[in-house]
Amino acid sequence: MGFAAGAWQTLSAVERGAIEQASGSKFRAAAAFYPPCLGFKGIMTVPTLILIGERDDFAGVDACRKMAAGEDDIGISRQKGEGAPVRLITYPEAYFGFDLSTLTTAIWYRGHRVEFNKSATDQSSEALREFLNSTVGPVANQ
Image (cartoon, rainbow, N blue to C red; front, side):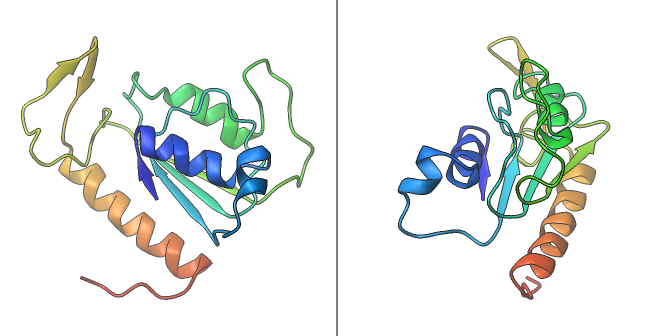
């Protein structure tokens, strides 16, 4: 699991390719919160969950939509059924960093809005729990 740039690393670790193949240890699932999806083909080796705000113009929700739909940056689609499933969940009123509870007042970072969204945070926590329960086994409620 990763957030922002860490989410990019998460996707890199499980997308079929040199990085995934070089890893001695393999993952059973991957979850990425507001990752920059640009450059990924979406041919994942494990079930993958992407959680991003609909208003996130920093990480780029459109690139994540394309990746989840099986298209790369230049519009070439992957073969149907190729790779493990990629599930994309977007949160309509959420921006980049929607789970950062210290940002109750929006800030602008490099020209992009970053803001906490309690509803998106709560929904994403539940979505993550359900995803992990269905892919790797029960996750204890905390």
